[in-house]
Length: 109
Image 1 (cartoon, helix red, strand yellow):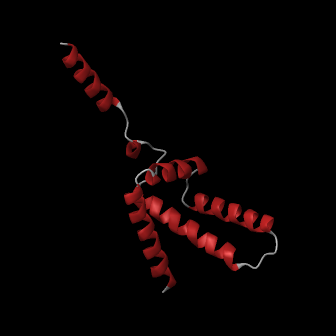
Image 2: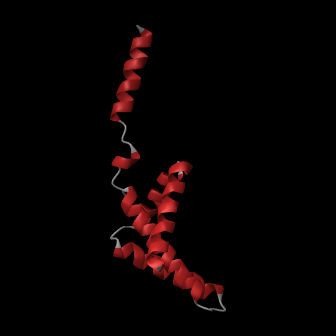
């Protein structure tokens, strides 16, 4: 009887728990790839500027990243939660990064 109660309790908790993909704060994988692609483009733009000051580079990076988030209509917290969620599975995260590289190479041609 005790084992049955434990199993039922576990099933209840598993069925009631939200998976992160259902969480509205985690971007869908396709959208996350698009955001990462744009973030990488903005980083390349920062790197292409020959600034002497690290502070200016950091300011540009933050400004460009904020613009990317505005473009995609997402909040910084949402982006951070998505990074945390997808990076928890290194194999899947590598696939996402591979797709970002493909997108960047396609845009470069």
